[in-house]
Length: 516
Image (tube, rainbow, N blue to C red; front, side, top):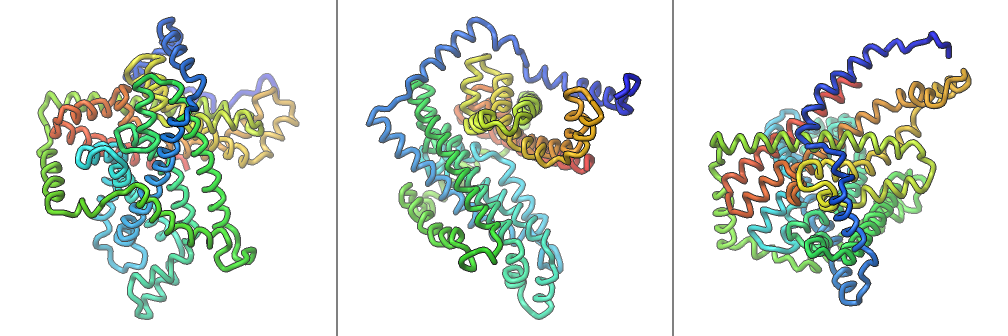
């Protein structure tokens, strides 16, 4: 390249960078970003002692028996929760979608309900259910059922609306009712995508079931929370290793099932394929076994006394505390939560991109898998020891976990970027680095930005609950108020979480559309 050649977009890029700095600076301030805290002698000593206590992992027979039971409980919570979510999602998706309907009636109302269900993090639902039903897996199953029911219903509705409506329309004109038109006209077209997303959500439910254990909803998370509070590093290490193996196994099984669903019918030994047949046979048995293992007596929840108890508990959250003093505290929590999500996602994008660059190498893939396998709440517990309690610990925890997620997605996007521009620059003698910056990166940029924005939508929900372990934001406010039984104040915080989640979702969607 000629020394006189300059980047024609340099001025606009400089303006964009300066604008981003002006916007991000107050968010970095709110997140209390202090990199120097990572290198303070006192913090280094504390985190060093804590990590040293992780070795050797606990291998006692009694503890391993508890660990095995907690692992099975985690799998059962995820499976039972997904079964409940599916049972909730099917009728809600039917009401929410406009597919097969000539006039939209319940659509807006149902979609608003879905927004509430998925907008409140599952950990918050779990915390509320623990208050009503006590410690144990029932709270985790119900929490997963509500949050994931909202997620599944929304995606199911969108998938059904995205397929060719002609077959359903023809059935409707032939006199078929709407359920049959959807069943025979739309679902056959969308079955692969519907099943694939459901399997993916089960994989996510396993991670979520571990996180919910931190508020007493059973499983590996509850065991991990006890070990961390007792500063028993050996037990924590064994639990963490077990969870990582569980996540890797769930990833592998999820991928196997999705590949089975993608196999063309002509290449299957049966109309459904052996994987699909195994799934259809084993799924009901697994669900029944999960509920039986957890020993959840849902019949006890249907009694008049239980109904009164639940109604009284819900009534205690109203009216919301809208006093000026409390709203000021909630507004500060909202700003902190937003700062944690933005800073954490931005740091994750930088680290994830750096780890995605040497994408063919197995060690980097292992690092990415390790980062995303450790739950954000565990990372937050560790980062709080490294930099102290507060929003910076939350931002670092989000960054570490999200870097593993984005790094994997970024690597795939870079692999799929058109190779021709970078090859042309290399043949023209461009210096090292420029072919990537001006050849590969621009082709992958839209996908990279989309992945980052999608992840930000998820991180705002997690940022809202990292305060449960002292990482600031709305989660810390909610945890304190629920601990003190101040339900009117807690309901205001939950409403703020919901509104913030909706606002971030809308902003992210708008930005993605602008960048297409």
